Amino acid sequence: MAEKRGDPESEEIGDSTAFAAAFSVSRETLARFETYERILIQWQKAVNLVSPASLEHLWHRHFADSAQLARLVPRDAHHLVDLGSGGGFPGLVLAILMEERRLQTGVRSPRITLVESDQRKGAFLREAARSVGVAVEILSKRIESRETQLTVGAVDVVTARAFAPLDRLLTWAAGLFGPDTVGLFLKGRDVTTEMEDARRVFGFDAELVPSLTDPEGRIAVVRHLSRLV
Image 1 (cartoon, rainbow, N blue to C red):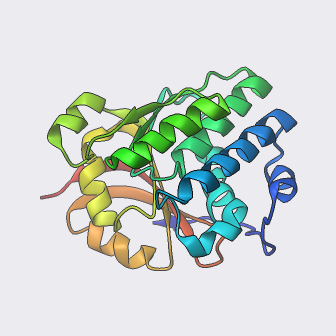
Image 2: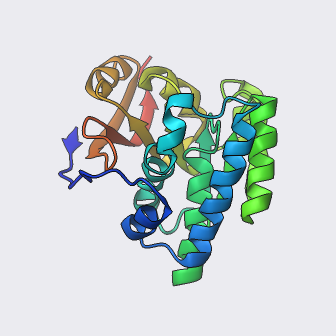
């Protein structure tokens, strides 16, 4: 296991201006995020998309936390699947940023599938994606279902945030991993313990990349996943 050095942000990304500066997004992309913010706040009144306490820190805790994965998505990725998308984190944020990358560089955006079994959250994701103008697929099924995994098949990138401990997450994601698949999982302070638990069942290579938004957070970058037992 290797841990990359990073330079985590010490100041909170508290609004759209700070977000635009931190991630160098265009005005058009920033407008998409501002639309996303407005719709999420509207829907939050009826559907618990994020914890109420984090809502006033939306740009830092949710948008920026998710956006930091974009730099780790391979440029040649064809299909990205986000597990337990909830309010769209990180999957819908990445869809917006992949469209930004396409417009800036001409690199084709990957197909993005958001897996969210909660029907109300799925409805939110459809409305949010339509409103911000990005193309995503919403799969309103449970990822642990064998049928779901067969439907999706092997992909290039698997992402997840605040979804499950790593051993359970890899159990659910294993059917989506091919030889070159990379997993990008936003984890907290217990990631080392989670990795030790996961290695009882799986073999894999991993890097821990420091989070830009949480001094104690890490991004677990997982490759070459295989089941041991």
